[in-house]
Figure 1: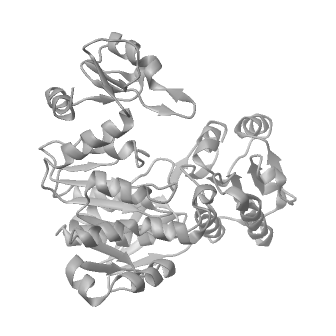
Figure 2 (figure 1 turned 90 degrees about the horizontal axis):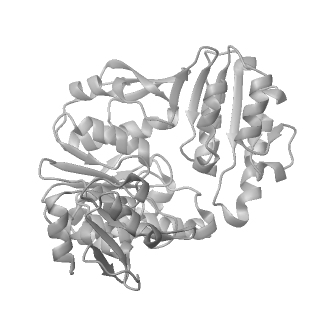
Figure 3 (figure 1 turned 90 degrees about the vertical axis):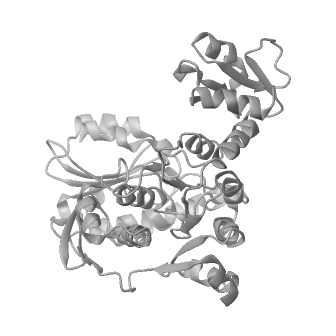
Amino acid sequence: MNIDILYSHFLKNQKICTDSRKVEKDSIFFALKGPKYNGNLFAKDALKKGAKIAVVDHDFKYKDERFFHVYNPLLCLQNLAKKHRKKFNIPVIGITGTNGKTSTKEFISIFLSHKFNVAHTKGNLNNHIGVPLTILTINHSHTIAVLEFGANKKGDIKELCEIANPTHGLITNIGKAHLKDFINIENIINTKTELWSYLIKQNGTIFLNYDDKLLMQKSKEIFNNDIIKKCNLHGYGLNEQNNIELIEGTNLLHIKYDRSLIKTNITGSYNLINIICAVKVASYFQVKSEKIKELLPKVKIKNRSEFIKTQKNEIILDAYNANPNSMCIAIKNFLEIKNYKINQKIIIIGDMLELGKEEIIEHQKIIQLLNKSQLPKNNIFLIGSIFSKTQNQFQIFENKNTMINFLKENSLFDKIIFIKGSRKIELESLIQQL
């Protein structure tokens, strides 16, 4: 069975599954492999649960006309997505960067939804598996796509571009993340700017963050006058003429936009540049400012700068991910909030993962930042094995469960609580005790 035959099956019932526990009737099951799992072991079970076809390794022993034998099921999934992508002549916006990818993607998708039927990345489906899965959800009712591209190592963005074929793109910023695999910041810059290289070759459109020093330095190497004319470059930034300014000191982000006061439902002044970027993109696609003003207060991103009011406290939850740059910026922003007393502020932060050899150094820098704050020592809580190895005077918990047990016996009331950590720490589970 070749890819054309597999694609014809897909077109009859456009359902893809990579988890045998979530099989839908007549779906195509891809038996993917990872360090701790082997999808081939669940292929027969997927068929029993209603899958039409199971894409398995070529050395899979069982024979059945419903088994689609390939050398690499993941590569097959990616090739299927490439084939599907070619069927659509619509704008595809690729978004990458160290911080702000998801927030920017959500802002852009919501703004564009006024004028377009938008296909966009759901959750954190932004890697070599998630991007193909997202592309395969595009259908002929969609008129634009907004795709988030994540990267853990060199070459990742180039690979995702070759699958998704973006026509437009932007890099939110450059910072330290996934240093375990990237090793250094230069590799991060080179990997993220693979999006630029792809768009230049395709005569695509690039939105450039003028406020990011590393991006601006790299742009001087890449964008000569001929390329700027060729690839349709559009800049944005805090100091550009965008009619957007921050109202400082509030826990929720308030901005002035085009002479109107907009009260959002997200936190963090660091999100201002993400909003400016989204407004730039939406304006490029001719979404009017009045509609953006109407949509902006409705934006709410789960686990990302999310404001939550419980019966006991107010919470700023940013438990979607964490790296040194985003952690530092978020803590500073929290400390600058003015409409709370200093003893009302609580900081709960978890380990920043995938930093490799620099993990202790980077965590110690966060400790130094916290030491400079005016918060009482017992208002700061650290969670995780890496923070446990740092030199500090704060309360430390091995994991989220030990913190939960502590909160059960030591309730917090009338506090504004900032929570941030890497995704695997799952700090959102603390909310039920707060």
